[in-house]
Amino acid sequence: MVVRRMLKIASRALEIEYAIRDVVVVAKELEKKGMEIIYLNIGDPLKYDFDTPEHIKEALVKAIREGVNWYSQSEGIPELREAICEKEKKVNNVDLTPENVIVTTGISEAIMLLMGALLEPGDEILIPEPTYPPYIAYAKYFGGKPISYRNIEEERWQPDIDDLRKKINEKTKAIVLINPNNPCGSIYRKKTLKKIVDIAGEENIPVISDEIYDRIVFNGEFNSTASISGEVPIVGLNGFSKTYLMTGWRLGYMYFYDPENKLEDLKEAVLKECRIRICANTPVQKAAIEALRGPQDHIRIMVEKLRERRDYVYKRLNEIEGLSCVKPEGAFYAFPRIEEVNKWGDDKNFVIELLKSKGVLLVHGSGFGGKYGFGHFRIVFLPPVEALEKAFEKIEEFMKSK
Image (cartoon, rainbow, N blue to C red; front, side, top):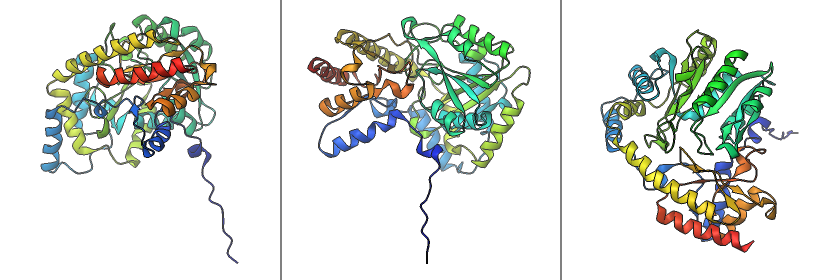
């Protein structure tokens, strides 16, 4: 007699949530039924009227045609790591050496590698809320516990220093910063960053600073955490998806700013993880060198287009009764509050009802953290103003109908 076993799937995989893409499932079902959907959920400029600069495309084609199609070093090709050091010094005033840079398959892989190297079951990691969802998902995946500290909406989504401080204990392995912030669009003030760095130094824990939107800034001055940290070790995360319009190319990097060599064990652990996944895409790495060292004109043009769209979205969100929004200072997201969210039950129901009735896809705020993200939604302001006008007509109609 053959005994048939039920295949038991690991709970760590079944429990993964990623709100930004999970809501797309509902949208695709509606599209099958003939509904036109306006997608304002995913931060991908290339889905709209932005394109990868030609010199970067040409560099990729050149690399492929010249046979640069082999496995490269697990930590990234040397010339790219040197170019990253040049960029970080010139743009962010951070002094690095190539041996402290690791090239990854986007920032998402960098987050996964860091969480895998840092967290044992029961360990805690401090994460800003609202937050980018993979920080929560990967911490849980490796048995860790993501602990949210508040970003204060009334203070332009600046971190709550007192809340952060009181949540540090012997289980805390690192403090995460996302600056400029996704999903709020805030830029952390220099004095705020310095306070967080000082706390990290006092507690002898590293800071993980996600800075992928470092060159998409509209208001205020962006400061890289490592540029003001002194002797406190920083793991910086950055990449090519946003600034260089290379989203689908999947390339990022992490660096270890480590004046007193406190992160050597962490770096070696991450390198071991990198070796088992072989390497990041080699020809794309060659193109990334050209991205960093070639013309940068597209960045100014992109930021000016986004500024106009930011201004429109901010104005409209604060004109519609029942919504209010802090003005985004960087990235390409707004994170408005739904003033009477209980009318819909919760923010997820708000997003689903809007989608089903008006065909506009947003992301519910609780997908970025259930406590401080609740009662909000994230909207991208990547489309041209004409497309945004159409979306906001529908959003306003929906708000008036309740």
